[in-house]
Image (cartoon, rainbow, N blue to C red; front, side, top):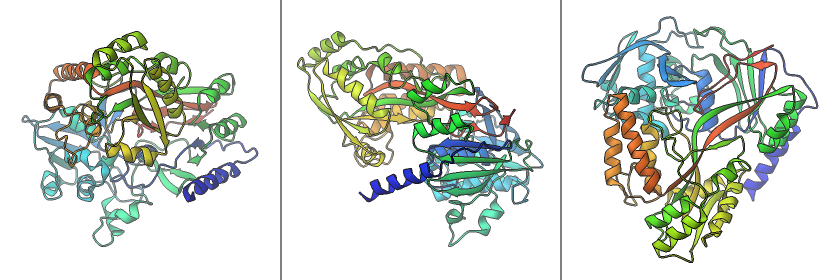
Length: 528
């Protein structure tokens, strides 16, 4: 009850904060966005969507990629790099002349410290780096600055080069100002307590103020090495209600609305003062079928349920403009992504498969569902189509914590989920959807295949082999083979890939919606 009261108060505060009418300044970008998922501003700990976007606009990393073509990797804080013949040593030459906002020059020691710090702190996203064999004990030897402008990283195996490089584009690889961070260290915490709410970067924008569940304000970094942005300030306001975001956008009180639903998008599309801007994101929506359930562990049942989802019906209604049909674990745009969509709503075929499985009259099963739009509407559609073949689906609604808690404990029957890649290499999703090295309840590694109790030693071997293939053509073929097998046999009903849609005032140009949640950029924004 306390939590509900807090949510109501937060919503009222957000609405009360809405001004009657105040055009945005010409040198400031004002957005409405739900930002209540920010729990930390430390790049070593950030693992949530909005904070990742913050880090993407405020910190530099060694390398980056083109949001329009992620295969194009380019230098960021590193001007260039080489890879040893044995594929295990990466040597980066730092870009000269970069300064942190503090005024300290960026050196290779800052880059080494940032990666070492992330591994030593060992927060949730640390696995992105530790999967290359780095530990708190060896990282000082494996990641080190050999001089002010040279950083050397030594991996434990000869991985596909792009696998290593893409992981260095992730949020956790953001470069922090060692001198500034360590000046605020307490009790050996490497500045962790301080950086949760403060800033020590060199990006195009710098932190001005973060008010949890209220606003995030960034100021332009006039000394940014890539050229100072046109916008002097970026103000992100936490506005929960899509209808309120629409009202503010139509009045010109904000420049961009980030959370409009199908109804609002349908309306603002007709407004000549507003344009809709979209970008294909890497997130996929899926059903996870727990293999501990006697019905769901039957391969015929798994296959039947894939024919009991009205993909096209949902695409044209409850998720219109927000998702596109996609039925493989690698999102479109990734190396080796499978774009085949073999499943449609086919009740007769599903009935036949259920009869072959020994359940001609269907069965009862539950589905844990976040009580938010459009997830709940998707669940209701699935409930209706399952029923056409006799599968009685009970929806168990809950908040994110409740549903995710059951899912992580493998206590669900069916879970309707959303999964976003952690980096742009195909292993990010193969690792979670198609790899399960230990299916025991006390396993250390708990990817999505584990959460659904899917024991797959052979597919795990295939996924492990793919990260060691250095020929990108052969590697893409390996992922295609894994996905075809996965699509036909897995306990995952993968349904859609997310499209992010923003309502943008027509005079606001240059906002970039990238494929990842940390590649939505403000630095090129201008106002005509």
